[in-house]
Amino acid sequence: MAVRKIVMHPADILEQECKPVDVFDKKLTKLLDDMYDTMIEFDGVGLAAPQINIDKQIAIVDVDDQHGTIELINPEIIESSGTQSGPEGCLSFPGLFGEVTRPYKVKVRAQDRKGRTYELEAEDFLARAIQHEIDHLHGILFTSKVSRYLDENELEELTEE
Ligand code: CO
Image (cartoon, rainbow, N blue to C red):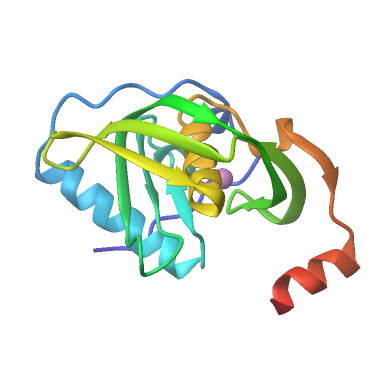
């Protein structure tokens, strides 16, 4: 287990399509464990492999204890509905927060660390985090979806929550 270095914007790896995972081995397990350590170290609710300089379709999301850590390998959004708007940030953009509108609910198909396919339904903040991370795997950054950046006062309110 180890904390990896986070790639900061701008960097080519953050804006390219990641490759699908086809080998589910110990190296992948180690990578997922390192991604978890890195996300916790930097206080994130999710992390995508390109953010630690790996161009593979791997992401993790951990928004609360109820849902635990969700490992998304080769994830695909197969259904989405509704809309939600809310503040979003990203470990590759320290201190930057903006309002992003996304579907409220998503159904995702992905593989776990053993290569088993599963489906997951998520809504609200969890759905937002999952969509943010899946976007990373296709080189899409949240800044391309921000309708308005938050100012200092709004940021203060956010961190006081
Ligand atoms: Co991000």
